[in-house]
Image (cartoon, rainbow, N blue to C red; front, side, top):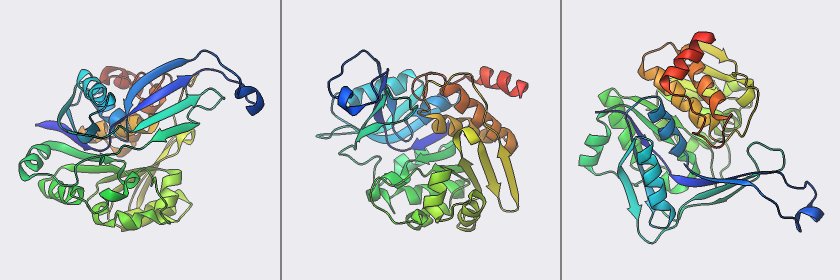
Length: 318
């Protein structure tokens, strides 16, 4: 049995940290050194590694290309302690790539990206695979809204079965990478009703519901079937909502931020780890905030991720 089964897209991030001129006329003729790093990312790539870092037994289901990056993704996940038995290599395809050029003062942009030419995860799951995937305590998906072809796919049935079997179910919706008029939640209503926990940031909450206020957006998502809604707000902290209940969790302050890439994924991992331990929701949010605060002190979404012992030590100081 696994602790967590995660379904979602896997790609690579290329992180460029340096300093460059701010003026276009100078920049177009400029060259200079930078620290360049390749990391395994995607909407769940950081999350699964963070969950494993917290000592959980994690399996991931997704697709990778048969290009030069596919084997890199698989090897780094395995090295991080993540099972890739349910990852499908798709012949004749190219990987998704994100290139973050962090040379102009921002901690997360500008970003150039290439979408994968394969589906992010299988459109349908075979019955024997479903049995194995649901031999877990929690089922999580990330990046559902990114990919239009996945709307109404086999993942809806997967979450329905997970709910029947008593797994904790969660989703980080993210946002559409194609034109989609708000409210975006119209395309996830079929799966939303099976969700114990929905994660989004404040901009995604607005896009999902058309409501700007976090409390109003959360109420719409709760009425649609989600049991718990977590709205992440970066340096402003996070808010957790259930019907008739609300908790605000402040962000954990750090002295230096290297970049904020993957901070939301680390928050998800910390929160879900707390849920699996049946901790109170405020403590789950605190674990999420601690994990997010540590990842921003190093490049990418995993290098600064604390292990379980470090999280407990930081919890004791809060």
